[in-house]
Image 1: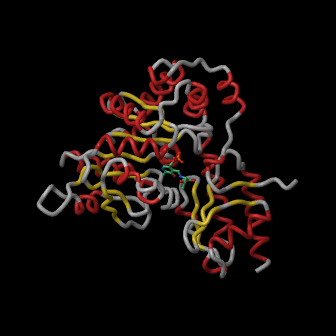
Image 2: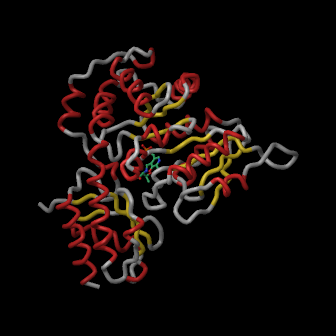
Image 3: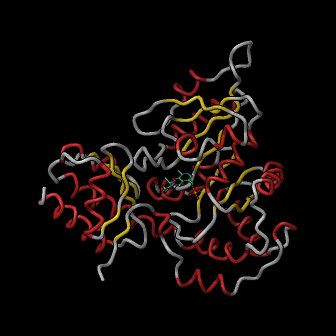
Length: 346
Ligand code: TLP
């Protein structure tokens, strides 16, 4: 049987043998009563690693962002984010549904905001305008192509926002990829942020789970929102046990995913009809334009499927590839060969 190389997302990673073993032996209790020792340990460690007071274990990144946005805002406010942000485009309008807010979105070339752009969109409450309640940033930026905030740019947004009394939340689904790319600890990235959501179930390989970290008072209230959203998970230590391994052991290997992505980007950039700048590939995501091949993104990925390489259409002519620990260097090289093979048939 042909082995499938699944580059659709780092969400496809399966738990490691060590994670499965830890899950089987996890010490558990009822987490709705705060009595699951493994969940408690994960929440403490996540907070410690991010340099925050407290953590909250949630089943998904979407739930983590949903809770965070609600914690910072009031109904009828605006949330400033970039126009291609995950919270705006891939979370079923959750900011309207749960927090009662609308987005004030800012177009960017790479998904990254800067203080000048943000400042220009901040609105005080008035007879016509809705007040800004929150600034949201995404790091690394998914649709921007795995782009990473230069730390000074991010700190400047936080300083500016705080001086105006506004909080900043980071969708750090892939903050560990940003950390690996910058060569600085996640706690440094998070230092000035009010809250961070990050995922254990993407590049870090856990089967399920994300974290929200921030001040203890907010996390205590977040726990109530989690329950309201149906996220009171009882003996969730089974999942937290895998999450702990994801948190402690997996960040160190992300540089490998990044160098595989770079290799793929370099090879793709040499192929006729494909346009992509390998210098812009910093993490494990690469987004390339296939317009020059005469194929749509959907046709391109559909033609790759029978060759055993999966990727996703991310726009009419944009295709996304994500590298991860289930796609080692060898698999990425084979994927590049298969793409060339498909292009040769056109
Ligand atoms: N992203 C998924 C899809 O939804 C696009 C992917 O394959 O990349 N924030 C960011 C930046 C994300 O990329 C994702 C997932 C989430 C939040 C949501 O996480 P989950 O899927 O755990 O709810």
